[in-house]
Length: 284
Image (cartoon, rainbow, N blue to C red; front, side):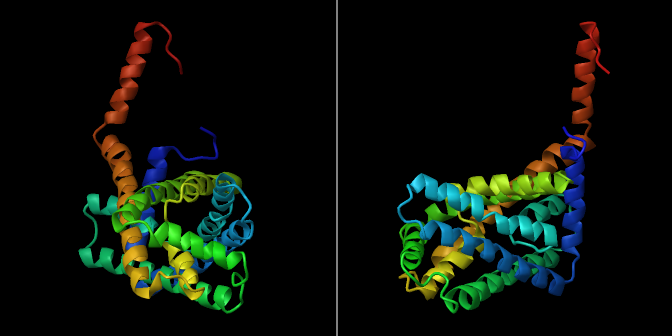
């Protein structure tokens, strides 16, 4: 491991401290930081949509690759400026909940503030800076957005969207963990970008991503409509991202918090040292 990166146990400790900070953060602060997060991720979404829907002759694999490369730019900026996304809270709060810290209303209120802030940011950027500016109103941009919303949200069943959202929650929170683990700017940016790149390229839906994309689709004339926007978009993706993020938090807690506390890591190291001593090749 490079000297510029924290070990996974140390990074987990840092994540635990971050989680406690978010748990006790003022609700207005959480709302404001999440609103900025919604705006910034939507900005990355606009770039991604402009490039992919504006190039209809691209092969589907190349189009997904391009979308995967560009959409995560918003996440990198969010992390660097201290804004927030809802998808990080299931990971953070799973760790502190397993440690039995804080009260239930703190968890619910902070997650709700983040979710609402992200929604406001995505809708504001979608209406004022995408629809009113006509950024995607022309052909082929408009047709590409409508087709994307139809393929990803309108046609799939509720449970399919939910299942697709689970690996996104896992991958995005792993990206956030890698961002915490790496300290220099380039490594941090790469750590944030790569897991989200995998998620976007595979079309695993991220909550704020589709808060924005689906809202833009409706404003451009999609058959989705605002009622199904709630039922077919934000609800299943919220549930799936929450499960995926909580899985990451549970994994980090069990392996690096419980494992360290119970001495499992120390026992493994001692066993390795004992084995090497028996073989006469102890390494320092």
